[in-house]
Length: 126
Image (cartoon, rainbow, N blue to C red; front, side):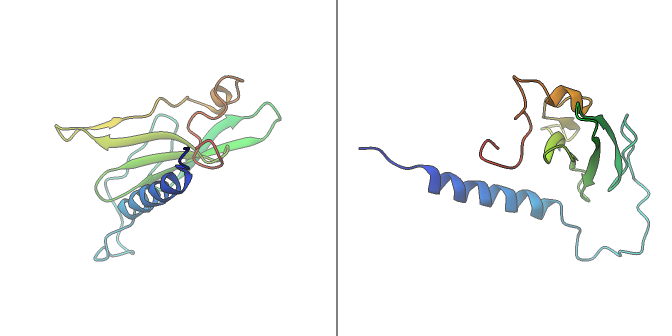
């Protein structure tokens, strides 16, 4: 007898995405007009809530990387090339933030035949 695990996995994935998105929401008490002085800049120039160039595809399309950061310091970097999750910085036991993903530095790393689904957040292979 075979069991279809897809419904259980689907609901687990939805709960995980909702949890992650909730962690990225701003605090209700934050003043949206106040400036945040603890912005970070990565080596490719993306700042808190900003975008940076992520390279050009083989087809000549320009791609960008968007940086998302919450008040607790969690940082997620998502590329416009298929909504690819490139970096995810979370705290370890000691409280220092580390990147837990093995992402590439630019879009050309994601275009190979052996890793086109690496970091994918959409579709049937996410």
